Amino acid sequence: MTFWKRLHHFFKPAPVENRVYGFDETTARTVQALAQKEGRTFEQMLSDLLSAAIGWRLSIEETRQLWRRLTPREQQVAALLSRGYTNRQIAEILVISPETAKTHVRNAVHKFGLRDRSQLYQTLAGWEFEGFE
Image (tube, rainbow, N blue to C red):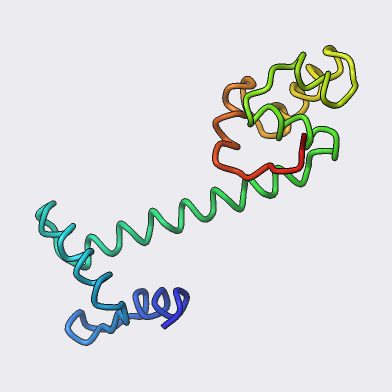
């Protein structure tokens, strides 16, 4: 059963005893073990896990939408920043001035609604940016 069908089954109003989750055995055992460890019911644990997964997915989509608002050059600069490069190093790689690199970083930070480059670094942590060098 696909994720979306499981989601539909989960939110479908039905008595708990008639609810069908459609998980494989390993997933069901894992959720049950987590629930027991925390002194909660299977349904409570499943609900919290699903809510967290949906929140995480929405966060990723929001970040992608913000990424699309950047200019191609701002994307290059942000990608290099996320790989740990300084403004000076970014400027050397892209053959621009350090001040221009700083401006692109500032613009990207602003478009993401963040305070500083370290927050942008954290926001993009884990993204794959191969080919931006």
